[in-house]
Image (cartoon, rainbow, N blue to C red; front, side, top):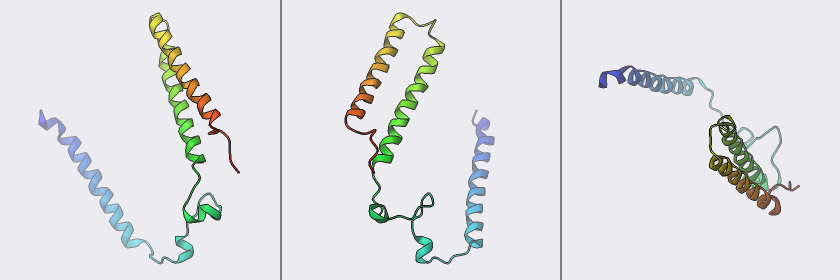
Length: 120
């Protein structure tokens, strides 16, 4: 039974050795000449200024990303439910509407707190 895992272990070992080898060769070949302009943070082609220059980013980006993930996961749960809609009982139908209602309450709460308002 353990012999069935030998090919998997060999493949994992080969991948690990190859990864270490590639990183080692890269460290030998790359140029190493750091200077202040090269080490400066750079994002999206925009120079940092104000609060962002000190590494302090506004949470608005993260709040929008988390809200997107929450509602994306909602859609992920809705598709399988829609596929088996004919086979589930009324209880399954009701449970999905409770789920949608709870997400709607969360959306209204986020909207009321101003999480969807973009600050300049």
